[in-house]
Length: 53
Image 1 (tube, rainbow, N blue to C red):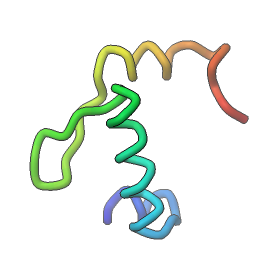
Image 2 (image 1 turned 120 degrees about the vertical axis):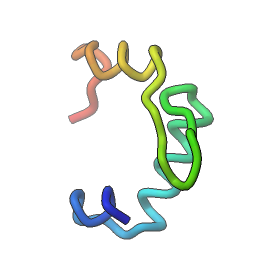
Image 3 (image 1 turned 90 degrees about the horizontal axis):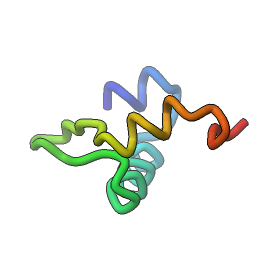
């Protein structure tokens, strides 16, 4: 809910996005709706050549 509020998005949209990022190995759940960014996720964020506009 915090992410949805901060991003001004519907909670279902945020949940679906988190599920996709998890499937792609970008984040991992740590429990109770909390996620941690994986090393792959950190590299993707730091790589501007893969950033979407």
